[in-house]
Amino acid sequence: MFWFKSCQKCKGDLYESRDSFGPFVTCIKCGRYFAGTVSEPQEIDENVFIPEQVRRRKPRRKAA
Image (cartoon, rainbow, N blue to C red; front, side, top):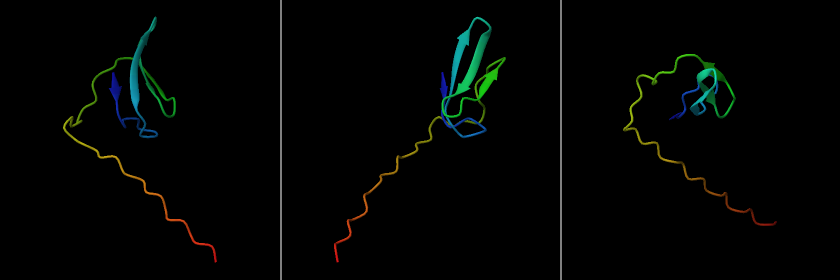
């Protein structure tokens, strides 16, 4: 399971995984590790749409 922009340290994406010791959550961006019980984050609105920003190239400067 993924939680987007939920890391408190870097605002990166978190993912849940499991090993022989139990479930854990890790940040993809900074590597922060959360062990122990895992529950759904609260106060997340699933209907929020975040549009991607379009990057435009700056026009080239003409030679003098």
